[in-house]
Image 1 (cartoon, rainbow, N blue to C red):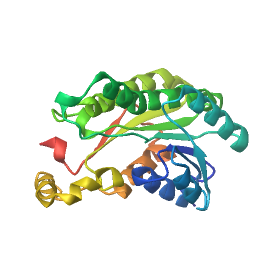
Image 2 (image 1 turned 120 degrees about the horizontal axis):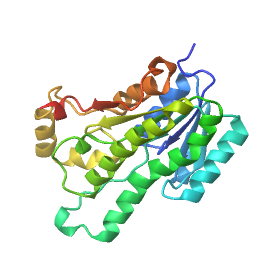
Image 3 (image 1 turned 60 degrees about the horizontal axis):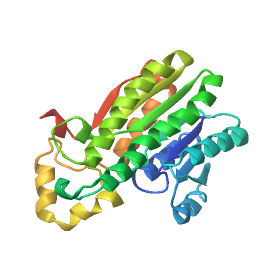
Length: 244
């Protein structure tokens, strides 16, 4: 018996990286998974997997979110889990960050999860049960990253706490994950610099970078009924980096 049997799950950014790892694991655990992503080619590939349906979504669009939530609920009869994973990053130094950069980052990484909860929570409330998992970052916990990315992940941290208190009495749990540096296409540039990669590994108590499965397994726990009395929690998955 799977840990997510009979559950309908939406995972944003589900066509690659951490999101793809979640999609694969959740489907293996019995869920009907909607891999929501803006990349249509990747979505077509995702839809070929068992128990997975790819749906196009621009997380920065309020209208897209409203339409997706309704379509999923109409088609599958319920929404049990939402994982707000989609996001963007930037290596631009703070001296070069302008208001346009700031607005784009905060819209995708901050408004995206907010809009997802705004439109999905009412369906969960109607069934008096649901689990939302938001993906923040270890940079929201420590003094690292004076930039728009860190600000956007700090917003995810704050809005997750607020959502937990807002929706808890409707049976909806909201928790946040704080990944460290994970080996994904978004961070593949690190592998081109052996010096930087070596420094990061050396600075991590567990002496390795994270893998998508590390995040997927934590998300699985928070999505499942095993965590039925957990809401408003923060789970850090960074190999001990932020504990120093």
